[in-house]
Amino acid sequence: MIKEISNEELETLVSLIHRQYGYDFSDYARSSLKRRFQRFMGYAYIGGVNELSDRLLQDATFFERMAQFITVNVTEMFRDPLFYKTLKDLVLPRLATYPTIKIWHAGCATGEEVFSMIILLQEAGLLERCRIYATDLNAVSLLKAEKALIPLKCMKDYTQNYLQAGGMEDFSSYYTADDEHAVIHSALRRNIVFFQHNLVTDQVFNEFQLICCRNVFIYFNRQLQDRVLRLFYDSLAPLGYLALGLKESMMFSEESIRFEAVSAVHKIFRRKS
Amino acid sequence: MQIPSPYDMIAIGGSAGSLPVLAELLEQLPVSIDCTMMIIVHRLKNVPSDLDRLLSLKAPITEPEDKQPVLSRRIYLAPQNYHLLIETDGTFALDYSEPLHYSRPSIDVSFASVAAAYGPRALGILLSGASKDGAAGMQQIIAAGGTGIVQDPASALFDTMPLAALELCPEAQPMSITDMVHFLTELKMSAEHDQ
Image 1 (tube, rainbow over the protein chains, first blue to last red):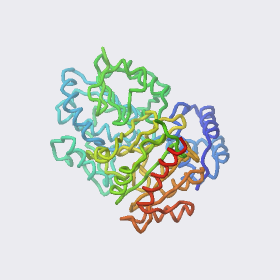
Image 2: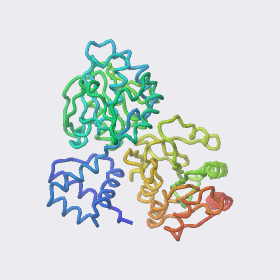
Image 3: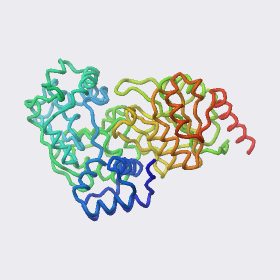
Image 4: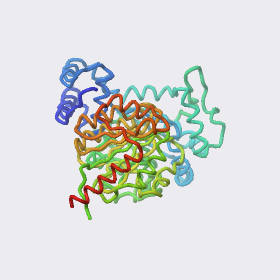
C-alpha cells in the first residue's frame, strides 16, 4: 500500500508546481487531485512525496509527464446518449435559426465529444454553418484530438451509444478503420479548430451559441467553478446554451441565477438575456 | 430524534450477486441512526438505469451530484460512470478518471476517500462480487482505524470479492447476511440505549 499523501504534503506539491512551472492547481478539487498524485507516484515508482518534490524541482520533462497524467483525459463518444438526444431535440432547432453557429468545447481532452457533436450537427444539416472551437489545458491530448484516432476496441460501445442517442445513419460511415484505430473522416472535421486554453487563467476569446463543458467542473472547487461560470456567461451570446456533465450542478453557485435550466436532468442551461 | 452511532459513515460495496443482499440489508436498515450510508455497486454505463429506483422501494436513496453536502440519515448511491469521493469539507466529489478493476464507480476509490474523511468513524462493508475491487479500499479503512465487515464467502453468490478482502485484511470480520442484519440492528439498539 502506497503511503497516503497528507493534506499538507498536497499543498506543498501544489505550490511547488505553481512556483516552478506556472500551473495553478490550487483551486482543483482536493480529493481527486490527491488521488491523481497518488496514482502517478505508483505509476512512476516514486516512493514518497519528498522524492516526488525533488524530481519535480530538477526535471522539467518529468513534470510534463506528470501534468499529462494528473489532468484527466478520459472521454467517450456519445457518453450519456440521452443527453445527445435531448440536445438534438431541444437545442439544435434553436441553433438552426443562426446564420453562423459558434460552439466551444471547453476541456475537450482527446476530442471524442467534439466528434460526437459534429456527427449530430451533420445529421441535422447544420455542420456546414458551424465553427467549433475545441480547447484543453493538455497539449498532448490536443495533438491526439487533431489526429482523430479512436481506439477501435471502443467503437462497439460507441456505436451502441450513437444508436441510443437517436443516430440515423450507419455509424461506420463516419470513419475509416485500420487494425487499431478508427479515424473520423477529415471532411467532417474541417470546421473544428483545436487549441490550448486554461480555464483557470485564460479569458473570453469569442462569443458562442453553445458551450459544452462536460465533466470538467468536477475537478474544480467552488471558487473556480464560479470563475469559470462567469467566463462562460461572458462567452455566451444572450440566450446561448451551456451543457454540463450529468452529475454536475450549478445549484451550489451564486452564478446560477444568471442561467435557466433547459433540461434539468441532462444539465442543459441557457444564459438569461 | 437523533440517535448517535459509533459510525458517521457506513459504506457498502458490491458487485455481481450483491443486489439481493443489499435489498435485504436496506430493509433492516437503522435509518434513525445519525450516520450516512453510501452504496457503491458496479453498474453498466450509458444505459438508462433503474437501480436507484429499485433500491428506493426499500428505503429512499439519492444519487449525489458534485459538491452536494453529505448529510446524515441519508442513503446515497454512486452514480453510473463516475467515481464517488468525499471531500474533507463534507461534500461529495465526482471523478471521471479511468476505471479501476474495470469499474467506474470503483469501490476502492470510494473506500479510500471514506477512510481519509472519516478515519475511525467509518464502517466498510463488502458483499458478493466477481472482482477484487474493494479489498485495497477496505485495507485503507481499517488502517485509518475504521471497521471492516465482509460477506461470508460461503454465502456469497460470487466469492472473489469477499475472499480478496479477507485475504488482504485479516482484521475484517466475515459475516453471514443474518449476522450483518443483526450487527446493523444492534447498532441501532445500542444507539437507542445510549439515548
